[in-house]
Amino acid sequence: MRITRRALTAVVGAALLLVASACSAAEDDPPASTVEVFTWWAEGGEKAGLDALVARFTAGCPGQTFENGVVAGGAGINAKQVLAGRLQQGDPPDLFQVHAGAELLDHIDAGQVADLSADFDTWGLRAALPDGLIQTLTVNGRVWSVPAGVHRANVVWANQRVLAEAGIRAAPATVAEFVADLETLRRGGMESPLALGRDWTQLMLLEAVLISALGPEEFTGLFTGDTRWDGSEVTGAIEDYARILAYSNTDRNSLDWPQAQRLLADGKAGYQLMGDWAAADLTDGFGTFAFPGNGAAFQWLADSFALTSAAANPEGARCWLKTVASPEGQREFNARKGSIPARTDTATTGFSDYQIRAAADWRSGVPVPSCAHGSACSQPWQNAANAAVAAFSQSKDRVSLQDALAAAAKQFVRQQ
Ligand code: GAL
Image (cartoon, rainbow, N blue to C red; front, side, top):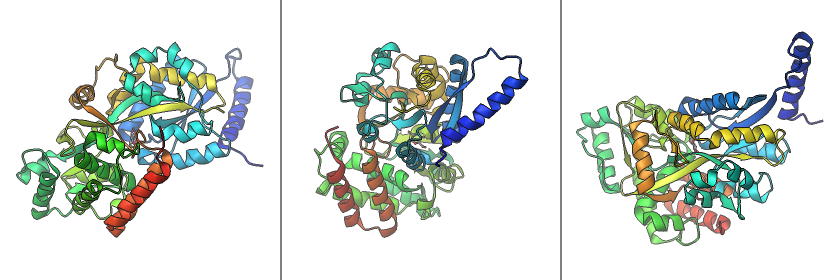
């Protein structure tokens, strides 16, 4: 007999309830129902953001108890595998974290997530979210997840002390200037001036280089079938990417983003390209700029929550989603997470200067989706792209990288 994680929790919970009801006078209280929320937010600003939602959920959803289905690993690199196994085995959490956009497509096709269109109306989300985001969330005419906030991916974080000591005073405006600054740091004795981590963080870097080489529109076309992956512009971008990669730490394939961030924070590197969840941890002493050559492109991703179609506690799960959807839930979550609210009507009390600037850039910039964070490409496509960059990190074989990326696009592109 297979004992699922949920079944085990239920058995233990029931036993505890029996003991409690035997001992307690409060026998009229309804039994607490658990809501399992599956995320990869285990530490730092990510956990702080989740904790803020939990506090509001606990206060606003009486009789419901949050159950933390967390699996650590940046960008969900481990969590998504565990989730896929659980969904396949019929052992789903009530809710799971997912990026708005193409990342959810296979789950929708497989009937694993519930239609939230009616809830969107009830919670007034159609008026509160930007039209473009609602369009992204809509597949087959229905809405399948509730967005918690919007992050920007194409941000370079700079250690200001390191740069000042090297005499670097301005943010580079082009890839060539960025390479020159990396070279200045290396000549000054810093072996690996660019802090970098494993596969998905490398994919983020490659995407940023591609945005500079192709511009927002053609870059977006890489994921809709309108731009060729085997063309000369992508070849040139891969050459730039290889040039930049050469300035990064050689143990990159074994580091997650917080460990790479430590290299930057400790002054062992001058720069790190990382989404603005880093804002929660890098405060004083760090500057930011959009990746050189990206112009006004705001490479966005939106963390959202989907309700599984076989959830054990759909009512409690909907109360979690309502919490996430509320203006105050969005304010408290995003203030700690480094992101900006998905809702356009949320107060920005408690937001950092970085976040206020990001909110303005989101309003004025050119939105560009991300494959590393699921707004541009489906999960299998993202897996293939991650594998391609991780292999390249070892082999440095530019032709194989371009071939692998072109093959992934051919296999996975579809009308989204
Ligand atoms: C992203 C996610 C962010 C943050 C980041 C690093 O995919 O959208 O919220 O968690 O991964 O783990």
